[in-house]
Image (cartoon, rainbow, N blue to C red; front, side, top):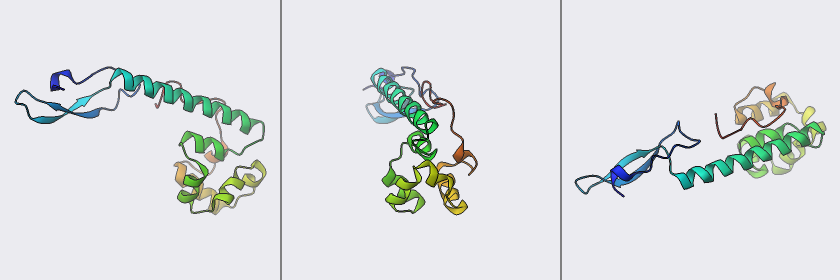
Length: 140
């Protein structure tokens, strides 16, 4: 694709530019910035809608005392039990147990600090969950 034809379709990720390879006027490959491409924008919008729905579902389960607030941060950061266990250096069964609200409330400060560091929040924020999804149309 020619450099002048690199797609510039505005989307939900406007603040970031993708880098595409394009051919300049001399026939050489160059890097060209692109703010988006309509098919990619549609896919990103659908992905963020799915994440938002997952967050809303997990928030309802936390409010019903089915899950601990840890589940919210896992979905928000797109982590599963295996990945989170690696980050916090705990076994998977312990992380799974911490998804239980009663077990989560009894966690030692040192374990809470590991989770907080992983999610880049304070230990107090680990216990706070918003009323609804923070993602309306993608990342803010």
